[in-house]
Amino acid sequence: GRIREATNAAVSLYGFSKEEILKKRNEDLSAEPDKTRQATQNELDVIPIRYHRKKDGTVFPVEITATHLTWNGRKLHLAAVRDITERKRAEEVLVDMNIELKETLDNLKRTQSQLIQSEKMAALGQLIAGVAHEINTPLGAIRASMGHISSVLQETLYHLPALYGHMPRADLDHQRHGADLGDQVADGADDAG
Image (cartoon, rainbow, N blue to C red; front, side):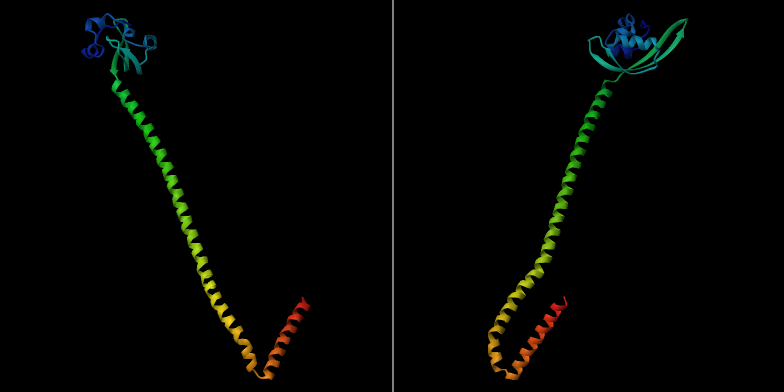
């Protein structure tokens, strides 16, 4: 519909003089005239976003709150139009920041996962080193003992003929009989099996 009145704020917002605005229809100020016409016909109370055009051609977002009434038998609507350019910019910045935060969080989660994996591998390495140490310690002792046992055995075998040479004949026969008896016990165990 035709504009019947305009505030100084509207004059400042659109860049038209008051006289110029009063010669226009509400859809003349809209960058979306069909949507504006439809909203007026449907008597919408709130239009969260619509794009309007200033005198210099600049298109900008507005939020409209309207009251529809009848005055002196004529249908009118009173519209409060608010420029929401700064709010839209802030929303865009907020969206960009949310995207950046999400990417940072995803990156942090990846880094955390890699760190946990590295710590697991380090712990596994320490565990393996500990097990290897626990195995190597007794093996080292066994190796050292084997060397000592081998040298004692060689020395004993070296002195054995001399020891038999000094033993009385009865003791040698007794030793031999004990060895034969051991062989018989072993043979008996084989036969039982």
